Length: 251
Image 1 (tube, rainbow, N blue to C red):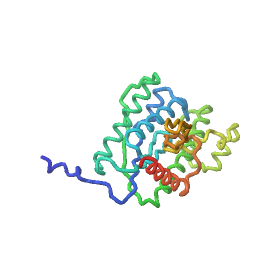
Image 2: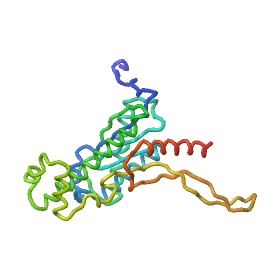
Image 3: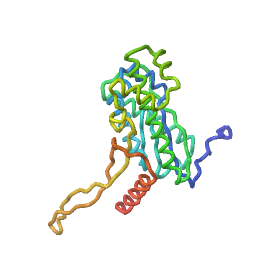
Image 4: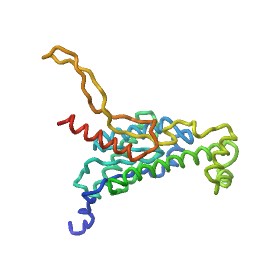
């Protein structure tokens, strides 16, 4: 029957940078049932970050970027020989389990199983930063629209809020919020720009028993960056430099 497994040998292009985009399935309902605050909740954020850290520990990607219920994983080396079926099944399954465990550890009760879907996105290296810039743009749109909607929900029901916001441009949304005492540019950076998880060098101190002197060395540590800059090519060139540095440290 193996001849019927017609997709099992489908593999990612070997010369491409590979990004996996994981999206929470039905998370609007989940966040409402779990009682998370709207539009942003620190506990939900921490559960998502915890899942990112588990992904980093398990698969060692170059970079992970998350906002809302979305996680983007830039792979350094592609596991499972690049088999798309494996990537599209193992990563969302692992993330779903990690999210569930994170929720349980924080005392949350989930009334149904959590699931993520996954898509495989092969890109030329020169397009990687443009991809992440587009996702960061989406994080900003999500931030602005979410604050506008939930601010209006304090004044009107769901349908009226949706009708009021329908067709509104960015400038009008800014003005709507400003009139109600909220300057959107002053909300936390992680809400506006998302969160990055990546390895960065950290100086550590030790003792050399041979020379009987204190010594220092650089070691790579995982960083959760909640103050991300606007993404540029230079930012991702820097990540590439960190990867090369890590390789030299490990040699």
